[in-house]
Length: 88
Image 1 (tube, one colour):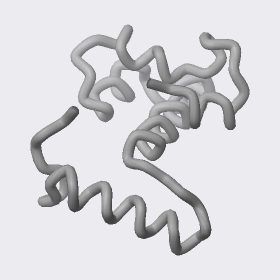
Image 2 (image 1 turned 90 degrees about the horizontal axis):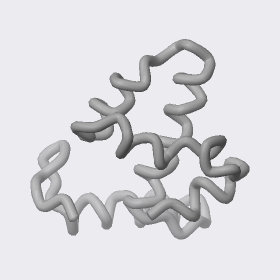
Image 3 (image 1 turned 120 degrees about the vertical axis):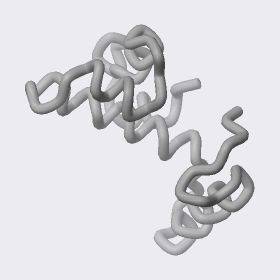
């Protein structure tokens, strides 16, 4: 797990913000699901030619594009909903 801070928040504070915002809209959302959604949707932009795969990898903090590719639902043979909830 990432132990640094993002936007000045530690892991616990970040989890609370994501969880609380999800609860406002009636959903249980974790930071992992939020990150998975970012990566999965990022691949929509890669496929459309609006984003380089390397740029998506950098935005996700991955040194290797191969790590980022696990978020590409089409490579995994999944639909959007499955990809957003099934990534590990």
